[in-house]
Every structure is written in C-alpha cells, then in structure tokens.
Image (cartoon, rainbow, N blue to C red; front, side, top):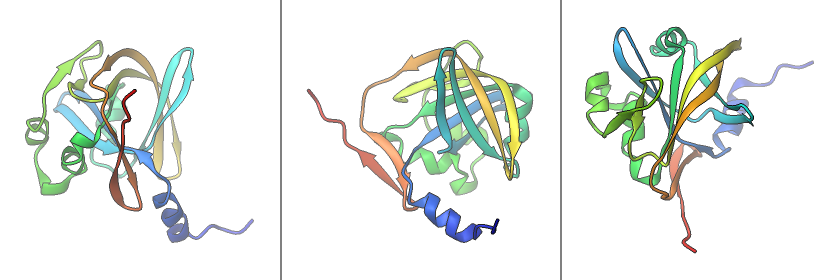
Length: 166
C-alpha cells in the first residue's frame, strides 16, 4: 500500500466544510478552551459525540486528565471568538474567557451562554490515532442557545451558514 502525501491529504481536508466549536474543560490550572472542528455525533443512545485533539496541543493533557469536555457549537456571531480560542493574539486563558459570557452545567466545564448548542460531557473512552487523541464523550447535559446562522470552516476561511426562517 502506498503512503498518502500528507500535504495533499491536508489540502483535501481543508476543502471539507466543518462546524466550528470551542471545547472547554476545567482543571487545577482553571478553565481551558480551544477551537476545534473535529467533532462528530456518534450515537443518540446513549448520547455520545467524539472530539479529536492533536496531542501536541498545549491543552491536550488538561483535557485528557480532566475527563470532561464541553462542546460549544458556534454561530456566525462568534466568528471573532473562534480565532481567540485558536491562540490568535496569544491571550491568556482568562483573557480568552473574558471575551464572552459563560455558565456551568453538570460537569462544571465552561458553557458558552450564546452558543447555538452546548454539550456538557464526560469522557467515556479515548484512543490515540496518529497525531491525535479521539475522545468519546458521553453527554451529561445540553444547553440550547439562540437559533442563529451556523459557522463553518472551509478552504481555510470562515463561512456563515444562513438560517432561513419559516
């Protein structure tokens, strides 16, 4: 079997649109968050999602050791918040979290109050695959925010998914 060219694979994945999310947790260092697009529904019984985090990420170990992850689904109104949690501007975690309003649900992880939806989860299992850890997350609580236009990342740029009324 021939190896796939890594740059060609990355370009192919850049052409695939993905929902933009901020995942959060809390641990001994306080609240931690990061922007991710690798989130997927696994099953609705029991309610489970998967989240992929690069193991070279500075936040990886905190997410792994905390055992809790909240997936905050962003709307187009959060386009400026997404790069902040992706590390743009080199803000501290406290400064990043000060950019929005947060609440807490069952696990204690920060929940973005204005997110389209937030899935407050405990990690039920994890598996290292290549450069990433795949976290299987059992949903413990759900916060539904305003229904707004979605935010996707495709072609290395943000795009608004229009919400049609009626």
